[in-house]
Image (cartoon, rainbow, N blue to C red):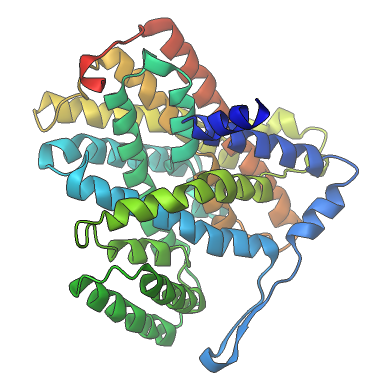
Amino acid sequence: MIKKTVTTFFKAEAATGILLLLSTILALSIANSSNSSAYFEFLKIPLPLAIDFLNIEKNLSLRDWINDALMAIFFFLISLELKKEILIGELSTKRKASLPLIAALGGVIFPAIIFIIININNSENLRGFAIPTATDIAFAYGILCLFGKKISKSLKIFIVSLAVIDDLVAILIIAFFYSKDLQISYLLLSLIPLVGLVLLNFKGSDKIFLYVILGIFLWLMILKSGVHSTLAGVLLAAFIPLKINNKNLLENLAHKISPTVNFLILPLFAFANSGIEFKNFSYDFFGSFFTKPLTMGIIVGMFFGKQIGVMLFSFLAVKFKISHLPQGCNWREFYAASIFTGIGFTMSIFIAGLAFIENDTLEKIMLDEVKLAILIGSLLSILYGSFITTTFTKQKIEKYEK
């Protein structure tokens, strides 16, 4: 009975979102308990990377391996899903791709503009402009699935497509704005595995282990180059063939790694990065929290900026007949779903860790404030989205979903 219950849970679409929530609660609980020092010291365990013949030496901690290596696998999966959607899925035609693409742009531009306007007089804060622009795919989709048929399948697919494009934009932002100490020699060396991947793809090789070996080499070169190493996951996915000898290579690979990503990597990332020490905040902190430009820029950008950007750009796309609403969906239901794009969570925390690195105590407190703002912005989006969904949408029974 217990085994059946556990199996059913991990097959549920909302399971990843629930695990992320539990991981966050666990991290917050430990970080504010008598064992908090053990939690932070555990994440700082040094696990240096040293490969002499490649002249690679990096002082990495356990948290660095989670953020730089495991999250590269997450971005690899996201990019595989995006490639599949572009080739044969919901983004395979201009008309299908136009709405999530346009909506995603609105959902990136508006939060960034709001954040910049609020922090225009605080130049130090502006490095966090990308924090409110991201959508957590797993969490947002998990929450949507909790509402069953109140949210149509076509609308869920739209939100996932939007979030995938959203996160791809986030990766490009990371590559351009959060890379540091660039080493051109290693960027040039990264061309070697890229050429190898091109040849494998051109010859139609179905040897996954060869792609993996070249992908690891590519990750090492990009890690050393100063560009954020998660970009390697995106580049590797671009060269995985869709089909070889009637084998669904890309889809099978995504299917194999998705449980590891959803039920291990993402919860582990949430656990390693959500630990906020409230004792570091002063007594008057919460009184000023909602007036600080940095925290307000994130909360307002996530909660208002995402839904306004998605709705406005989508409305204009439909109004000018560039695209149309997802099948079986009206504007009221579309708005309810758009609110959930404000759930930034893991992606926003990931970007925050790049923007505000813990170099000293002041930076750590600032990063904790940013993480708390992300949690509040995500929570507001969940609560308000849930209210609108349960109040103004009806149970949907759609023939085309069967």
